Each structure stands twice: as structure tokens, then as C-alpha cells.
Image (cartoon, rainbow, N blue to C red; front, side, top):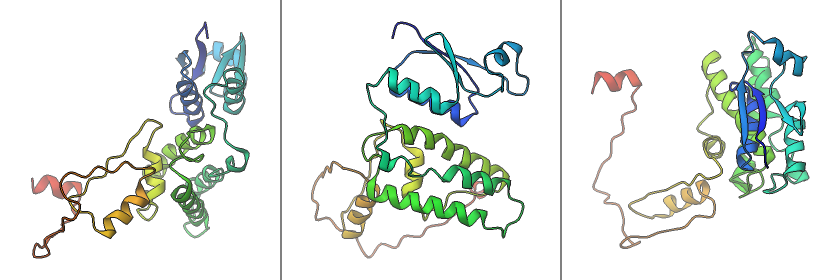
Length: 238
């Protein structure tokens, strides 16, 4: 690609982040110009009359809407492919709408939280069996669309609802933290069946390295006490 693609955007927008992630994954150069969405300048409204971001300039033509932008980029620059197989394209697709419903809800009993939890639970189960990404080991357009939305969900619900993703959804929590080049190291001094089972649940296609004997066992005469403390308690007892 001889010329960097021009992107007009706001970094707080998950749709902008989707486009930027797509360009990064395809190793395409781009120039980024940030837009103040609270005070949209005339030059921006001239190329995006509805005032929406992101807007990308491809072949001297301004294109709005992240769906159209990412599809255009995929067609124009197919290598590496980010196409999500059709049968997997809808995985996690209802999470964003149910999150918005819960975020806007003012009635704790209207079922919006349960609807979100159902979608998150279903996605957690899918990733457990098919992960680490939606298309197994290959990151695809579906991940680049969903990832920023999950990030915004976590931030917004934590701020406005004091809500966070439950520890009962471990595969979802791992998915929300990993990137395409991320590697996870899992350490254990011993290797009982319980630890091995946990490793199989958390790791995808692992490489096992044993230093010393794999027959080592924990000393059962040692008693371990765990104190769970708040951040303030940590500071007080420091």
C-alpha cells in the first residue's frame, strides 16, 4: 500500500477501535486524526454529515460506518484474512445490545441484567470449547468487533452500575484480556490432577515444561491461610 489510509475518529468509540485493530492486524499504514464529538468541526461534518465516527478515506473516497470500512479493507487487502466463517459470525453478536439495555435500565427487576448474563454465559461456554478466539486459534473480524465492545461494557457498567464480570465466567475474562500475540504462562510447583484439569480449562494448545520431577507432591502438614482484603485495608496494614 503506497499511501497511508486517512482515519477520522474518536478513540473512545468501540467502532473506531474495531477499524484501527483491523488495520493493525493487516499491517496497513494509516494516519489518525481525532475528532471532538462534543464540538464537531465543519470540516468533519462535510465528510460525515451525520457526524458519526469512524470515517476512512479509501481510494480518495470517504467511507463511514465500521462495517463498511472493515469489509472494504478486507476486500482490498485480503492478506492476512480476517474473514470469520459464516457459521461462527453470529457468536457473541447479541452481547452489545443486551449490555446497552442493561446500562440504560433503571429497574433492577426488568430482566435486562439476566439477559446480559445469559449472553455472556453462552459466550463463555463457546470459548471454553472452541477458543481461544471465536475462530479457534485464528483471530478474525468477529473478535475485532466484539473485543472493544466488551472493554467498553466492563468500563461503563463498572462506573455506572458498580457491576463486573463474574468469576464464574473464567473463559470470558481470559478472552477479554488476551490479544492476538498474547501468551499465557501457567506455573505450578506440583502437578496433581486438580491442577492439570485447571490448566486444560484455561490454556489452549499448551506447551508443558517440567523442571525436576513431575512426581512432587505438596506437604499436607502445611496449613495455608488466605486473607481477602480491600485496597484500603492493604494500605492500612502495609
